[in-house]
Figure (cartoon, rainbow over the protein chains, first blue to last red):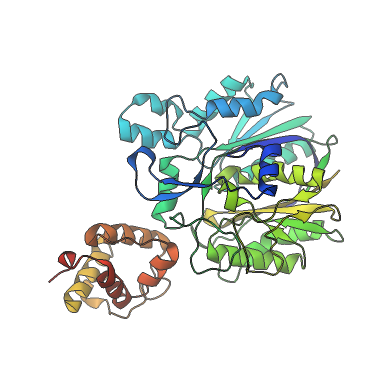
Length: 368
Length: 91
């Protein structure tokens, strides 16, 4: 995909199991791990796996879903912003939306769950709850969903079709979603340790929601060099030579030429993808420190790109970048930073995400 | 017991994965299952692992262990013999 010109980031925030962006950033700096071992199938039990659930929200599905309250709290600063109009469109992204509701219906037979079991039903319901108008676009592209939403919003702005765009993303984990990852054995009883060179890999899953307000010319940060690439290789595996990672990073590398950056990688805790990703990042950005935060927050799935963007904004603002919490050396690459690093001598951050289906995404974020 | 377990595994592979052009007898004990040979992919592996866990009451705990176990029929048989209750193995 051709790179869109830079856009500004006027506001952003996120919600994780550790709180909003400020609270999450502070907790990561303290090395807190939000993931806790709990039964993968919730009330139905089964193996205990690392999951990070927003405090006060139950893991098992309810009808209406128990994530509406946390989402409304996250979106409170956006109230009255006229979102969902032609000049202020909304892009809602998720990899799962309310799919857990279908499993809940299957388990309990309660038809009340069915009202939330499809992306459009979920988004319509959310738009009504948050007072959005009809200009709401629903986007899903596995775990690079939020990146695709950012790219589409940027294009609308650059085409002059809107004055501001809201990208909003949410993925709340459920027994259905976690059960799928567990069946693949990449979610197992082990805690994730992103980029750590160890014999067995594992990931954690976490609740995540976030938003970003994009404009053409107003905001503290600039979003540049957005890149999306699909290596068209396999549903659940990457090309063994890492070419897909490298191809996605190339436009971003070019956009960041001459700048000193730090790297926020995808880093779920799987071994093969972690090796390939960290090697590609090291090749594209020699010497740049690499961190990943999913060892604490878990993988927030389709929302991870937006959740981690909000956290990267706080890191840029404060100059303090949380390290790769939950992991320790040796790492796959010397540049993996397990402890906090400083952003004060850098000109921005490369944020990268990867997804099933061979999808890769990355962008450059810096001060405007 | 080894031969009967190997035979049972071959039968499970063919039936679980609905292999149309392969009979259990055509599968060699040392034939690679993933990536070459039968060329099974990760979705096939997922289906197979679920079947094996139910059939033999074993647990495969990670994707790395799954890959090791599914290296070949012989590897798989060895993996199962080391973990399954003997009463669940074919006589």
